[in-house]
Image (cartoon, rainbow, N blue to C red; front, top):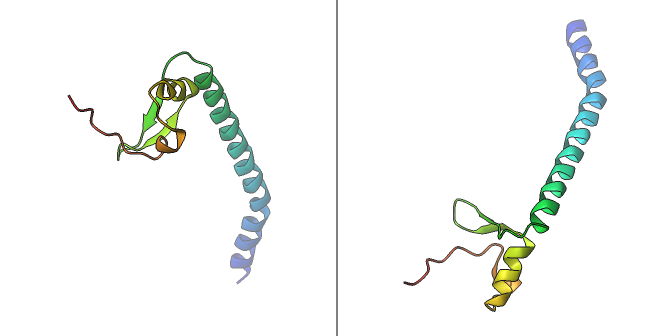
Amino acid sequence: MKEWSADLRKTQDAQPAEIGERQRVEEALRASEQRLQDILDNSTAVVSVKDLDLRYIFANREYDCSLDIFGSSEDSRIGDILQAAAV
């Protein structure tokens, strides 16, 4: 019983440090994602990302602008499935 109590105490003592580390990692990830978003949004390249089901999950501003030229609405972009172009 004493061993179990000692192990429990060690685990409880480590929790605040683990929570703090997780918060630091999450903040670093958010900052990294924002940097990437800023880079892509300020690029003149047209960038879009699709998942394995060919649904758009990301498109930068230049991509949005290129679709605006062809009359596509924002509502029909993210989440839509890539349709094969008719030849």
